[in-house]
Amino acid sequence: MATINRKVLDISHHNDVTSWDAIRNAGIVGIIHKATEGTGYTDDQYVKRCAPAMRAGLVWGAYHFANGSDVQQQVDHFLDVVGVDNDTLYALDWEDDPNGNTMSAAQAKEFLQLIGQEIGMYRCVVYSGNTAKSKLGSTPDEFFGKHRLWLAQYASSGITVQASWDDCWIWQYSDGNVGPGPHGCPGCEGDVDTNSWGGTDQELRDQWTGIGPLPPQPEPEPNPDERPTLRKGDEDAQFDGPYVSELQTDLNRENGAGLDVDGDFGGLTDEAVRSYQRSRGLDVDGIVGEQTWDALEQSAPPLPPPPGLPTPLSNEHQNAIAAIAMRSSIASSASL
Image (cartoon, rainbow, N blue to C red; front, side):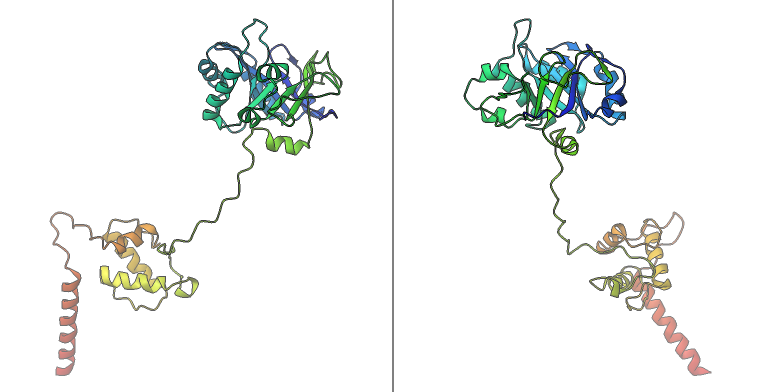
């Protein structure tokens, strides 16, 4: 990544931001802001600047300046301030502590493991330069290598990374004073850390959070037992099975509907469905969805009558009465 393509600024409360729009118009795509340090310090500008930067169209990231204090407490403090979401870039700032309490390699690995359990394993970016090279030596470490490297090296040539990585993801090439240009950025006064990206703007946005696009999901397997939702106007010919005829048969069996099983969801079938739904305490809408299908399949009993009303006759009794009425009608006609 020797060719400089200034696309990311990393800032803290030390930097005066005058215009997020000017920063964006200068070609910057992303901001990585200091959020926390150690187990207790919080940058008071982090939360204030997040929303305005994103409203200007910039992608947003947070870094934790690490030291040698308790790692779990550092992770907890970082996430208490930043939160866990799918829009933020998370970075471990692993550099020499000016107070002499630099995080060890074992602690850096623990930090990445602990934060990975919260935000997604290998999602956190590792910011480092000489610290990673000195702490890890010349031996590659597969675990570190699975994290994206944000390299700090203020030089225009001879860019090197620790053996765990083949290359860096982004490159901090200058602090605004030391290192090659371009220095600074419109919209941010004074010296500012500038970072180079080796791809397109869209590629940077796509890779920013470390989540990446979701893999294509397979189409769900069809459920052979799943029946379609039916309503007035439907016919068997619309479906891959005689579902309307099945409905009419079920209504005849369960509610004595007396329908012709013709596979046509017409007015009589609609009335029979509503009658069945009303008698079973279902939503009375004439639509045969999962709720109505399940009730028919399970032979749900009708609701009991209100107090003081006679118990409804069973289907068997209703059919017997209808047969008697039919015979009486025939006999009456014959006597005339």
